[in-house]
Image 1 (cartoon, rainbow, N blue to C red):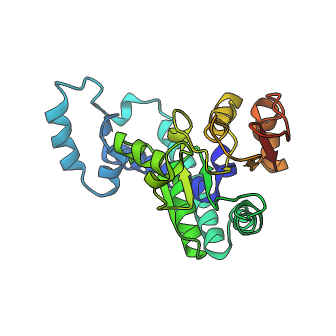
Image 2 (image 1 turned 135 degrees about the vertical axis):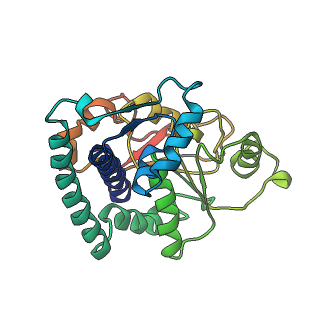
Length: 280
């Protein structure tokens, strides 16, 4: 439900991974060998028809990795495979229906976001630097947003996540986003920075409003994100923070606002300089 609220793209990716994992288990049961190797991509090997290659690799790694094991179907309870196949029918149906819907429709959250981006978040009345930082918990979503924004004709976008964040990346981010860096030393390579939680701590992003494309359950994590722009040295009179909250249907399931949104954390809705301006 959290990934569904985050983006339809992230949710469909989750369905795909679950479908493939369950399918690999069914295949192994049918073949009489169930391989367990947490540090190997077992599902990928099985679904690609590379079981022999997987078994050779497991044999080489067994001495150093005690988690590697192979079981027989009879090692499991009698109804286990019945449950797997029942799950497979459900997940195959869900995946097919969601994929068909995606191919015919646009993600409504994405549509609203692009409208707001053009009409408000980058408008000079609220954004004198023409820059924006977008946070999401999931790399699936940050990659998706970059692709969809570029498809919509919005350019000068960069994504940052755990796979790309290095010490050189920190220096580069400072030169582009830290208000304390002298103007002559600043870089201006992008207008929109899309990032996972990797930039939620230890980075100054004075020059940008923030959009939380998803809202963490833990309000401390939300404050850490906001703290990237709510920094000493900012030249802005007001700091604008935009939040996507769950739909009513999703909130009924997740209770996210009750547990971790800004109002529950006691944050002000709108104050002067140095305080967050929270808008739905």
